[in-house]
Length: 242
Image (cartoon, helix red, strand yellow):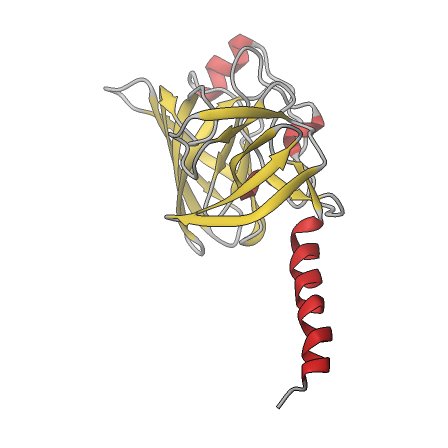
C-alpha cells in the first residue's frame, strides 16, 4: 500500500501532468488567407458563433473539454477574450510541423476558401484561359476540394488532366484523368474516370453553390463524391482554384 508521504508527492505530479497536457498553445491551420475559423458556443457547426480566429491565429489554449459529434472531434478553446468550440482539424500545436495549403496564398477570389490539410504542399496551378477551359474541361474549372473524417484534400489541374489526392489516412495519390464527361441532361454535373497505374478511381462533381463543410458560413460551389479502389468512398466540397 502506498504511504501517505509518497501519495502526497504523487498527487501533485498527476495534477502537473494534467495541467501541462492542456498548457500547450495551438495555432490555426487549414484555413485560407481570405477566410476565418468560426468559434461556436457549442460543439456543433449550427450553434451560435461567439467569435472568429484569423487564418494565422496562434497562442490558442485548450480548456481540456472535448466532444465527439458523429465523426467530428470538437475541442473547447480560449483565445484572448474568446471561449468556445472549434473542430480540432483546424488547429495544431505550435510546435507541430503541419503545413496548410491554404496559407500558401491559395485564396479563392470572391469565394470562401476551402480549408486544406496536407502532409506536403500541392503545387499551385495557374488558371487557364477561359476558351481553353471550355474546350478541355467542357465547362469544368480547376478546383481544390476538401473533406473530413478522414481529412483529405484534392487539387484538380484539369488543363493537364492531373488530379492529386492527399490525406493523413493514406498514401498521396496522383491520378491522370482518362475521361471527363459532362451530363447530357444536367449540365452542372460531371463524371471523371482516372488512373495512376495502380488503381482506377472515379469522381462525380455537381455544381450547386450549396455545398457546406459545416464550418464556414458560406457555401462552396461544388459537391464531390470520390470512389477509390483501395481506400473507399469520400465526399466533400470544392471551389475554383486560381
